[in-house]
Each structure stands twice: as structure tokens, then as C-alpha cells.
Length: 345
Ligand SMILES: NC(=O)c1ccc[n+]([C@@H]2O[C@H](COP(=O)([O-])OP(=O)(O)OC[C@H]3O[C@@H](n4cnc5c(N)ncnc54)[C@H](OP(=O)(O)O)[C@@H]3O)[C@@H](O)[C@H]2O)c1
Picture 1 (cartoon, rainbow, N blue to C red):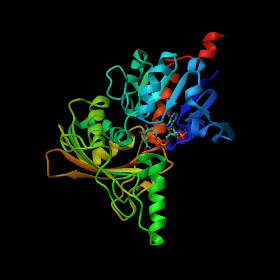
Picture 2: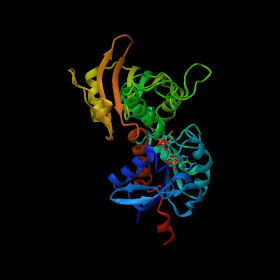
Picture 3: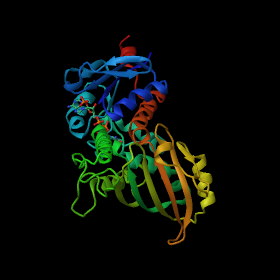
């Protein structure tokens, strides 16, 4: 018997990937229910070779649903996740609404799968920000071996990280520029077509942006509170796939060769590192894939025990939908929840 799974935000970028990944990975479902806002009621979404009709979140009763994959933004999650959790349905949330709550586990299964068990306090488990998820997958095996003290990361984040509207804006501006139209700026703060914008999410008092702050706080919560991390987050005109240039400083001496071997053996990682033209992964190749790709591994001689590398992943998959489904797999494989229909039988 499988689990009854609701996907909130099923018409969105992440929600559609969730439906695809549940099917691709053969997650044991008895039923999948796509939910979105009232605007989308009756719209059709694909689940394998089936077509499902979208229903409204606000009219849905979660009392016989086992798992809710939530990806409809922070304010929807803040309002709905506690109510859904109170109905005995475990919410795996993609927004930042509960990530920093001490009663809510923040999980990347390759890094801290055991933390999932802490879901019982609120029936909510949080997924990290997309740029954090791929980073901690790469940092974990290096931290276990070399003891990471400090991380400096610059991100190159695709427009799909800003939802459907972000993708539409890049598409519209790019096409418009070819017909000499003045680009209209709506979603981003400046033109994104043929440009880069060093600003994601709101500014904080210290001059960092919330996206940069999230990377610091989430890495500490998932991996190790002792790690110091400073980030610069940049939006780039790429549709799918976030890239990161990462520098780490370690407790132990580190060589590029040993780091490469450790990363090769680590879960969720594919090392693609030939020191020649094209011997590295770019977002185009990572889009639609599950792995976090690591390239350009080299020693950084400007600090003691330093290492630099390039890290790319599909932000809609490892950064969101895949990670959420992997968390659901931990719940199921470790028998942390039973299908309600079975319990009632
Ligand atoms: N994109 C990423 O890389 C990424 C990574 C990590 C986390 N996330 C998080 O995932 C969430 C969704 O992102 P996205 O990229 O999929 O956004 P998106 O493409 O803009 O989709 C948003 C989804 O939320 C639904 N929604 C909006 N308001 C709703 C309401 N009041 N009730 C029910 N459903 C509502 C929308 O339904 P309608 O179509 O009916 O409006 C749509 O299905 C956000 O919290 C985001 O921060 C995204």
C-alpha cells in the first residue's frame, strides 16, 4: 500500500518537477493530488502517463493524506503548513517559512538524513534554499575528512529560482531585445537579459542580502554551526541550473587529488574535472539531472589548507523537488510514517 501525497503548487516550476520525480523514482503512492490556487482549478498536470486535474488548496481536506509536498511560497506555507501538520499529514516545505525554527528539521538527505526523525514536533520538515542544497552536498564529504573552517562562495543563480515569472521575464526581454523593444523590468530589479544582477531577495541591515544570509544560516544548521560562510549571490541569465564558485579553508592539509577522490565516492556527486577546454560542467548539462556536479578542483595556495572548486546543479531538482522527494523516501524507507489508509484497515 502506498502513501497519499498532495503536491501544493503543482502548476509551478517546482511542483511540476515534484510530480515528475515522484513518478521517475517510483515513490510508493496510492494517490497523488495536485493542488494550487483557485486560479488553476481544473488545469491539467502530468503524472507519468496520467493527466491529473488541479484542485484548490483552500477546499482540500488533508485528514486522509499522508505527505504534503509544499511549494507555493512562504506566505502560503506560513498559513497552511501548521494546519496541514495538525491534521496528521507531514509537510515537506520548500519555502523559507519554517527553516530556522528549532522544532523543524532542515534536511538534505546526503548530509543529515537522521535529522528527519525530528519532524514529529510540528509535522513539518523544511527543504533548504536551492543554493544551499547543492553546496552542502559538496561540503559534507570534504568537512568529514578535512574539517572545513571557512567557506567563501559566489553564486550564479538561474532565473527559474525566481519561479515561473522569472523565466518568463528572461524569455520576454531576450526576444524583445532582438526586435529592438525596450525591455520591461517587473520581476527582477534590473534588466536580466544579457546582464547579471548582484542582488537576490531583500537587503539586510549589514548590507548582505537575505539569500546570502540564508546560505550562512542554513549551512550551519544542516552541516556544522562552527563553519563560517560568506556568500555573494548573483542572478544570471540562465533558465535552469545554479552554479557556485567555492573556496574553503580547512583544519587539515588538503590536496586537490585527495579531494577529487573523496568527492567521487560521495553520494549525490558527479566529479567532472578534466583540465582542458570543456572539461567541466555548466548549467546546460546539469539541467534535468539529479547530480551535483563538481569541476575545477584545485588547491588554493593563498590560505593555509585551501581548496577551490566549481559546483553546478539543477536548482529545481536537487535545489527543491528532488530533495523534497528524497526526504519523503527517508520517511517511507525508515518507516517513520505509515500510510493512514493502512493504519485504518
Ligand atoms: N525555483 C527554485 O529553484 C526553488 C528552489 C527552492 C525552493 N523554492 C521554493 O518553492 C516554492 C515555489 O517555487 P516555484 O519556483 O515553483 O514558483 P512558481 O513557479 O511561481 O509556482 C508557484 C506555485 O504556487 C502556487 N500558489 C501560489 N499562490 C497560491 C495559493 N494562495 N494557494 C495555493 N497555491 C498557490 C501557484 O499556483 P497558481 O498557478 O494557481 O498560481 C504555483 O503552483 C517557493 O516557496 C520557492 O521559494 C524554489
